[in-house]
Length: 223
Image (cartoon, rainbow, N blue to C red; front, side):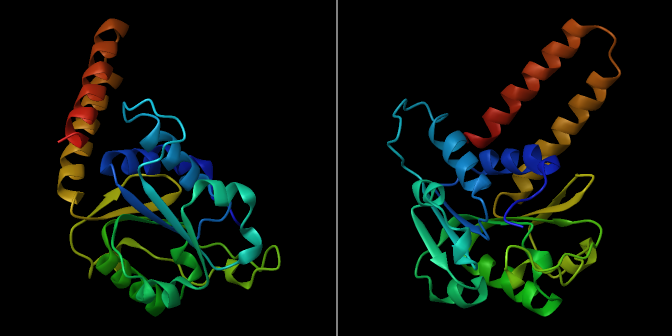
């Protein structure tokens, strides 16, 4: 369907904000949730206080034209209609970040790996989310491309360098690219702080750790 589950929103948006991309390509935009949230959190929280004066480029690829609404056209700078495998080789620009949120499972293995390689050529960083468990999904909304074709696991990403897996109960989330090493350091420090905080009995001390975690987050992506 032209949507994805909400149990990965925190992780994916944290990764997008961490990356601080000047340009994004959202492959399989569907309803446009991540384009919308990226526009909000990257543009309104940048300190300029310029509403509707967008400085980031957010493009998308959507295989099913009927999903495109007036809302999508307001959010995205450019919407390419067609199969990403056909469109990506024709693009003459590179992006700071490509989003593949609940998209990969719609490609058979060979095509999925081909898609990842093309994304790696066109983008400095890529965020992937795909289900941890295979479940059958039929054609939906008259869109044959909604059918699930393959279950991707960690082993299928061995050929990809500069990657880090981000914990999530329902999704296999993979961050690939230039900032993966810095992201790994941030996530390890964050995990350590929250582990300590979870064992604390006094709210004030826990609250101080939370503030430190927030300070750490902003100090990392502002560099």
